[in-house]
Length: 607
Image (cartoon, rainbow, N blue to C red; front, side):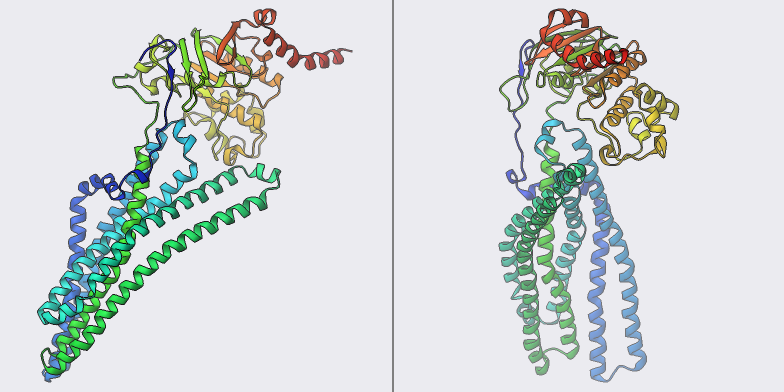
């Protein structure tokens, strides 16, 4: 890639589960099945042993019935047969516990593995992904979809193996009793296979619609609750509740459509099972009357048919579980296939970036989907330990420049050097690890004030936390709160004012003690005097470190060693405060406008 004025343009290619076969998504979890092969094998062997033992109970009943019919069974014999059944039941209970631990335990292991992979992967994605994917959709994938995958890999597999083994084994025992009657009993089963095949595609489509609507519901609830103060300020409680109700009704309608398909499949399975029972009662009864089979054989045959009826009915349920599981797995695979635009180049190495010097050469940058560059031919040298101010109109490119310096956006080779090294040749972690960045859209977590300040250094002492809070001019307000630094601040710091949130974010950045700190209009919510005071305090606290401050107010930047003026994505002027006052009309105008009121107040106070 060429340096100079090369423009970064990123074309977002939206991947979707619609672009791939759902069943191919099983490859996502195939390695986990291989890793736990022996666990699953043991579980399925225990399951089949349980099924096999259940098949022996009708043989015990047959022997008892035939003995009673022949008058060859006494009371103690019946007690002995009962003991056999109780003993078999106890063994069945023991092996059932084993397979539940092994197979259901595996499904939970799979769930944990997928959830961890999803969270780790999402944490590595960049702004492009979050601009086109809602938080609610990601939450739905990590909850509802993951639950469907877990159910399919646990109960779904159990029901499938149980149905197939139990069905085949029951048919084997029934063939032993009477082959022709067995053929009559299983004659309706092909109808079930055909119906299941026809309804599977509808199950996939309708379940996908249900999951998508659940994502919409989740995102709407999240955004409403996180913006509750705005909702109340605009008296939109009823409107939001009504919209949520409409979305809920749509979710119910989609579920009803899914339930119609599922509700069709299950009764058909039951009907076919009952039809088999009716055929056996009619033809088997005739065979018993004619003496072709004994009464014990007839009772045992009906017992085996009952055991086989569950597999016949379960196949519809299993088909539904598997279809839900693979649909959700395809959605999860779509998430895991997302790739960040900005990632380490092959051969990038970690580097100890400790000086804090920057050099930009001919940097031009455009956001994805925008033909007009946001930055145009930026040339900028920032020496280590420099206090640099950046000013400009809204949309001048100040935040974009900060994002690039903080290594949040890709740049062409040789256009951005950090400590003399091309940032594309070192790891992203190395660059970000040398910068403490406070963006405009700062975030606080629903935790204590101390935990929010110590986000980057969880092991920081109370003294260190208090020191940076004092530097950010927030300590006195914190200790005035009921629980001081242990005060919980609510979702996004809802209990705090805008200025308090900004100063806590600054304290968080100061605690990192990194060679560079970037404040992107991070004091817009405090008055100019407080901003000036904080910047002076930061300047002394960060002696020897590089400090870059973006501000719409120029007076607090008067102490900066250099101030850069941006307009239209370009650097149009630079110099000291006094230099810019004398020669830059834009800078001088906004300085006079912002300080005129303050000057008048001071003159009135003197009078």
